[in-house]
Length: 245
Image (cartoon, rainbow, N blue to C red; front, side, top):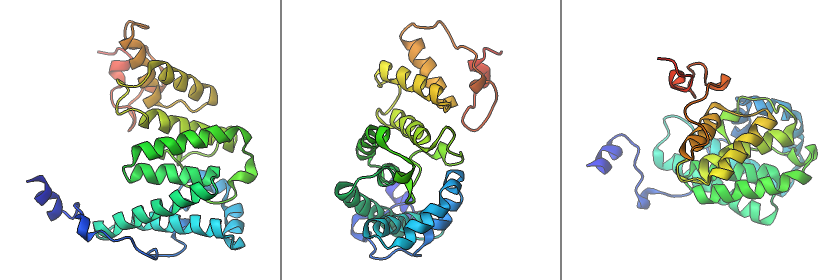
């Protein structure tokens, strides 16, 4: 059966096998994990200063990121990787209750999503977005995970606050319903419009915008769009969207 096949591939973790680790596999691994992301390059100096400060909440956040890094190490048993991810989530849950901040809420949203806790991720994203209006550059002085994988390879175009808002809005639209079919059409159209205004509209969100409009009779068929004009990993059927035979 499916469980036996998954177990044979090392992809199944039984409840009695799962133990949360007390220490990350490699302290300081957060640096290597974030160094691979373009957005982090703008903050590395400030982040190193924060890491050296010894502030308890910052240290705990960095520990959570170390556990998260451990969950992505190839060749490590699935139970160890899952335990590391859940330990990161445990730390960030507590931190975000004690002292919520844009960096901690972003890390919480990303790790909750990776751990399959969709509703928790949605709540963290909503809380993050509600506080961004009052955020300044100093509020991003400690390392954080980008909430949306598609934004990891970007520099924070338009400023850090707008970039964070765009990435959070993109991820919230993706997660707040299991499918765009079940999402509230007004929210989807507003999200796509806002992402366009921020300069961060993606092919996925342009397709969602058009699908909602098609479903509710706001347009008669696919409308050509530059974002959907060529084949790329996030746009596999440009001929359909551009009405090419």
